[in-house]
Amino acid sequence: MATLIKDKLDLSNKNWLDIIVDYRVFLTAVVTVVSISLAVFVSGLTTDPTLKSGVDTTCAAYVQHQKFMDVFGNDEFILVAAKSEGGVNNPRFLKALETITHNVTDLDNIAEVVSLSNLQIFQNKGKLFGNYPVIRTASKELTLPDPEQLDTMKKALPIMELLISPDMKTAGVLIRIQDLCRFDPSKIKRLAGDIEGILVKSLPEGTEHRIIGAALLRQAIVRYNIQTGIVFGILCMLIGTVVSVYVFKSFKVTAVTNVILGTCVLWVLGLMSLMGIPLNSTTALSFGFIPITTLEIVIHMVVRYHQFHQVSKKK
Image 1 (cartoon, helix red, strand yellow):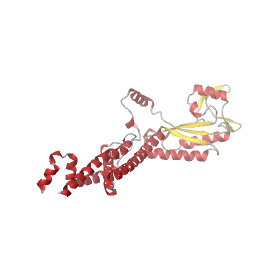
Image 2 (tube, rainbow, N blue to C red):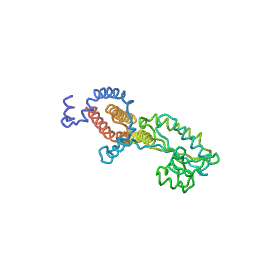
Image 3 (cartoon, helix red, strand yellow):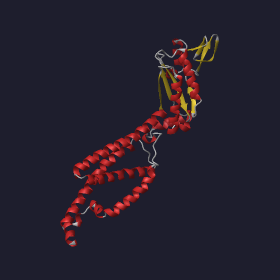
Image 4 (cartoon, helix red, strand yellow):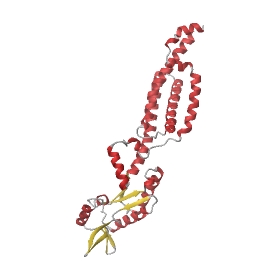
């Protein structure tokens, strides 16, 4: 009987999928052991808060930028923009700007804070010349110079363009953070929360504000990379499930297919952690491609298994 079955199956035409089916018990045990081992390392998967994995570090522009950084330090800053429909040239708003500048300067991991309230520029005061604050005190109230003087200051000091808008309704605060925490997600998140708290408490009612900067953008990109990997992976898994149900007409076989697809994703996560490959905008897309590409192989395996099963059952 065994010889007859062997002749009918024509083992000389077997491919690697046939071998996988024949030794499925042993291979399943091996896969289970490896999966459990890799699952231990999944929690060690890291992200790339520097975003350098998506940058060509060998190009001339990057090398030139690094030389600039070595000489002058990093040129990153967080910009806080506060808009007042009544204009920024009123004592209440300027006092709030002064409070914000002082309180933000006292926060941890802050290297420098620049705003209209602490900016000094070389100018004349009466018959004297020297470095004087941009914001002046008139009748014990804070006030800005007249528009013509502000335009002259903007020409002399380009940074003024970030500190006050042309319509004089928006004022900015430049915040430079320490180099050690620029790529630390937890510190950046805590710092952004502290700055937001200071703004809410200090700004007059009805004032709009925004916080933006390279450090915050990097954190947002990392967060979106994780979301992309999860959402894209789930959607592709659902598509694979629908295809499996349509092809196999069996929920049992579909469940087995999903287990195989999930195992593939687990292996990729574990291997990325072991090899030090971070989760970035490129690798996040793999969690959608893995179920799609793996589904084709699974379909061939299941179909081939049923072919063997039908032939064996007849004999």
